[in-house]
Image 1 (spheres, rainbow, N blue to C red):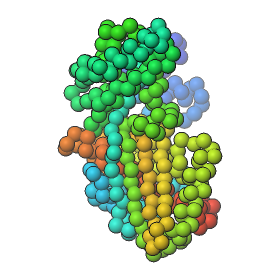
Image 2 (cartoon, rainbow, N blue to C red):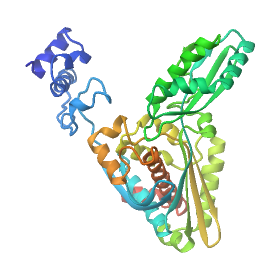
Image 3 (tube, rainbow, N blue to C red):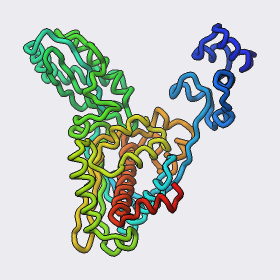
Image 4 (cartoon, helix red, strand yellow):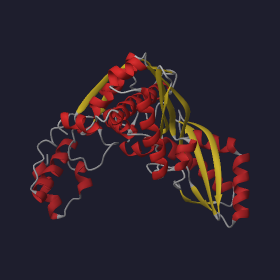
Length: 403
């Protein structure tokens, strides 16, 4: 059998390309050949990169040109009490991060929330979107296409759902812009994050639009979806799961756990997260929701680039005299408990820690639960950072932890 050095030689000689190595060796040998090639070309040592725990044969759907694995420290925060529509328990939150003080901060927020009886959390809307763009002759023709679509959603649903055994088309919204027509398809993808499911289903529906109207497909994604980019439409209409978490914390718990007051936290939130964000023209009116979202995404095998949409959040705080009310609304949290990176070994284990791996009963319940837990975790992080700012402890906390 060809060894890694021979394969690396052939790549350097131009006889093979990087993506062809699995045609000549098993996946582990192909990955070792790529590492050897990189070491020769760059003088880097890739010993740690080669010490990965997953099966090289099983990551083909997740990555191309496999060279090894990248490890991240995994911290844990909790317990975090959550009373949700699907998540109803105390959870330990796995957080993969390289940012010092993050886990400690979220952990402090979890402590306060749990001491107060837990956070409420609810998924209020589900809809993974894909929005193809079509070419038409003019506005008049565009309006005719939009009218046809609105009158024939059942035909589009039949075509779209014929490509999947799980996904359900919930709505199609047309937008006419000059000689362009955008159709924003939304799907309930159950426990899958569902981006690939939505794309394949939408392609089938787009074929129907082309065959029945004058519209000609230009691109299967017209950016009105909108995937992995800051977009107001996701803040307003949602994408993936729209989820909200809130908590009411007694004044005594606020003072004990956060070393500050409800009034101070409310003022910090108003001036920072609301006024400051508005002045900045931000799409996210929050302190650092993306921190918790990113750390859980990396730990549980979510699509890391969709942290862009996951940070689309609004944090509210109200001083109610003898208690503090706080909430966080994540408008477009795209998560799944099946498919994609959720199949990797350490990611499976993190999902097991949360008790949400695989398909839920009913379908979609596990992904709903994951969304609710992330929202409650983000709320913990928001409260802790706001408290640190209100008590002027932010810089000292980082200094104490050596960051």
